[in-house]
Image 1 (cartoon, rainbow, N blue to C red):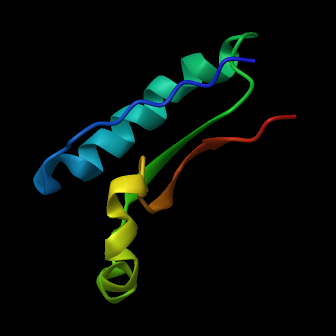
Image 2: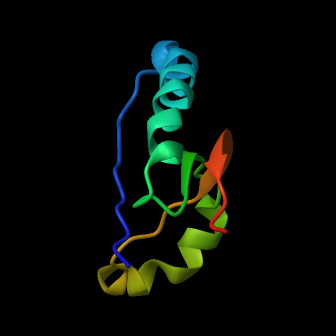
Length: 77
């Protein structure tokens, strides 16, 4: 199985329109026999106090982000 991650940087003023456009485009993903599932998330970073404690290990972090699910999702069956 191949997993694809795409990261967009969408201006706040365009986020609602982007989610709506993605929801329309997701119909094509859902129709594809090759697409087992998908989800569109929105990054939410709120752990500044926590990060102060792990600061000595920052060079060891490859990636740390937090995502909130949007209404665009198809579960793997």
